[in-house]
Length: 201
Ligand code: IMP
Image 1 (cartoon, protein in one colour):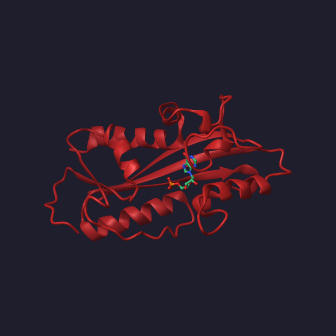
Image 2 (tube, rainbow, N blue to C red):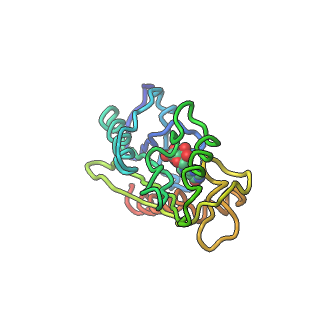
């Protein structure tokens, strides 16, 4: 770990994904010193061995908080399909096996659903924040349907086959700004930011 003096306004986002960190930096209160794992020089990948998004987020946040004693939060997200009893769930990133590949995951899922009339699904994000002795949970969820084939090229993961409820476009056709307003991640982050704004001093 780099040589840093810990203050109560330090907050680690336990992720190696710098895009996620940059995104949230625009929204969190300016007094908070937000750092990624790379910012503190922590290179290891934390194993996500949980059976739920909450478990995975908790594992990552606990791991970093125990190691560095700094306030910390972590997130975990994925897709849950009704007719597949919530699959791919925590396996969303690795649904079709190694090497992890979004296009392969989509093909695998569409093939599993090829005879399913029920196309209902949701994206979920769980965030776990460890703040002093408190452990806080935040959630965001967006309901929608799985399309029969890809539509749109924006976004990532399963975006091109997910159509949010009340929309005629897939996530893959929405701009990032529009998607963030209604997405599971956007909602969970809003809840976290609301908490930080009122409680993180
Ligand atoms: P993560 O926990 O945010 O890294 O998400 C795990 C996996 O869930 C990703 O690799 C994607 O396969 C899927 N996923 C999560 N959020 C989204 C999203 O907003 N769009 C499409 N796929 C997503």
